[in-house]
Amino acid sequence: MTKTAFIGECMIEISASTARDGDGAASVFGPAKLSYAGDTLNAAVYMARATKLIAQQGKSVPGETASALADDAISYVTALGNDPYSIAMMDAWKHDGLDASLVRQIDGALPGLYAIQTDASGERSFSYWRQNAAARQLLKDGYDQTLAANLAGYSMVYLSGISLAILSQEDREKLFAMLSILRKNGARICFDSNHRPRLWPDTETAKAAYAHMASLSDILMPTFDDEATLFGDANPIDCAKRWLDAGAGEVIVKNGAMPSTYLTKNGETGTVIPPKVERVIDTTSAGDSFNGSYLAARQQGLDIEGSIAVAQKVAACVIGARGALVSIDGITL
Image (tube, rainbow, N blue to C red; front, side):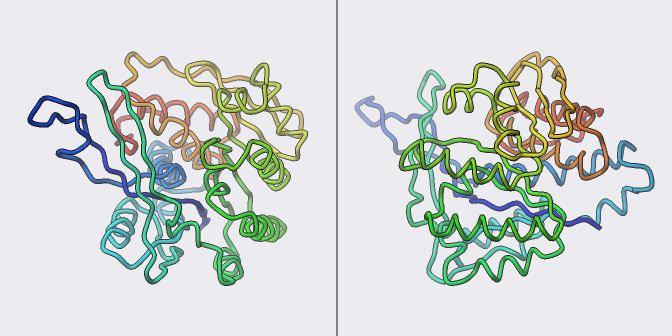
């Protein structure tokens, strides 16, 4: 049995189309759908789904069975409150096959919230209320020590740039220290920068945090467009080399419909061409589904190129449907 932890933030999502008031003017008020979302949560769900799919189709490392792999634990780590929305989210995660026992519930705290407004042309805009979200308090009051003890024995820990950005500088340092200890004790640390400029006070703070994470990361899965914007990388291989030079062990650069590029500290390198997608409907969880599926494949013994191929097929399925979390049962790996 292996155990993987995903650390991050999941928020309540309000999604609505542009409504019209009695005079025909655009209004933000009207019918809306309430849901939840988070990049690390999405990745965790897709790892669980891909793990099951890989086992069912006999793609896992010899000796592993579907029943044995079903016992693998995938834990989501965040902070929430004791309110009905927090409890409902945890129940939903359990239904998706995740372990929610490591969620810290803080009395009086609430999850973050964001609203998606879609205009008549389909263009989306976002408004966030996350400054006082429970997830920002995850490591406060000495909880980093509690979490470190809870994660002892985990073979893999995943987090993103958002996981870092929502923490104070002091709490980020606590997180780095905890990850360093976990890595020394055998855990593989996995990271996707998933850069969101509005969450950082400035680009230099973000770059410094990412550099520290690179020095702790065994597997790093950035997206080229984000990296080119932030770091000025000319091409995916330059992006991979930069992360490798910063200390990462295995770098996979996602690049949309273009080939994924990989580079390792052992000198392995190459590209993998993704399957063609006839119609892209929603790219919301493209990178998250890739990351979770890649880790599922690597955890089950597939090599880098085989794992990328699995991840690309899952991501291709995901962007061909609407929503962040969609069924991947129909995929042939």
